[in-house]
Length: 354
Ligand code: SAH
Image 1: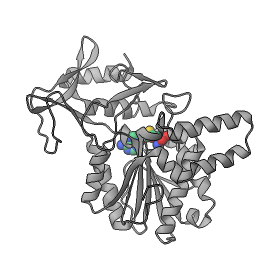
Image 2 (image 1 turned 135 degrees about the horizontal axis):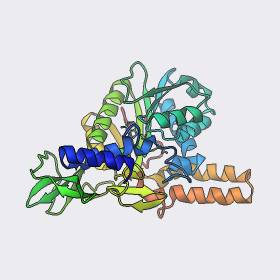
Image 3 (image 1 turned 135 degrees about the vertical axis):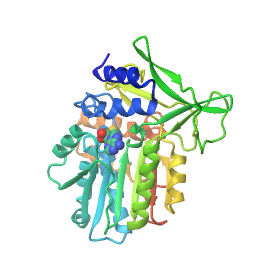
Image 4 (image 1 turned 180 degrees about the vertical axis):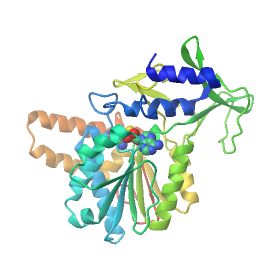
């Protein structure tokens, strides 16, 4: 049993079964023993590789996307450039490198990172040591300039509640301790769910209150100050039902209840729900569009070609593999989706089909 497992067990003994939401939140974000407090979850030596850790091309193209939004906003003299859950800080570093092509953007951009893990904040400070950075634990209420916000694999890491439909009623799925092992158990009393899609007995519903709240806050901020947000994550465009709770440990799928704190836990992002929330705040939504198509529209082929020109044989092979990983539908190209929110119809269109 992991250290965090012992803490969870003690809590269950004291309070009874806990929601999957609380299990996931503690397993990922416990300040000392949670997954994100660990040394290095991302990258080849960690448990999973995100797009910015796969290739510099990813962050560079997102940087150019941000510059394009800034230009369409009318080249404001100040812009807030935000990232949610920046991990190692790699995406922001690569984005700022490609944005050097437009020094006026860099001069205008005030960088804000939203990160809860103290260890990852340190890591981000090392990666971005030649930039001025403002850190926050929560989305800050900024004012006086438009906002450009990036969130890659952020929403999939937020804790969810799961409900199971039995005899026409939703019951929350709880985590209990059975003979020293964590297992699922339905709550005794029915849950009161106000907005569920049509469902049948046996269906699973996942709700992510933090994700909903984040999109509400982003929408309000962008509506008020102007600007755009880019949300990149994996999940189906429309599906709302189904159990998508999963664990990754050393690049393999694992049992999410087996070793809390030692495996990365994620769920699929429900894009249609986030879209509905943003629309209800008067926001313009682009996508979701598949990541592969988005990167192709931003010119990943040309960037790949350019990088290969100065590369040796091994590097060229590596660049080909990176391109395939990011855009191929057998890898990240289709499962991952990109959705943009903006305050009007024309600022965040780059990368999305007409
Ligand atoms: N965007 C990075 C890392 C994704 S992992 C990449 O693509 O490589 C998720 C990130 O979100 C981590 O940095 C984690 O510490 C952070 N995080 C998770 N929950 C958070 C919350 N509620 N508020 C702020 N950051 C959070």
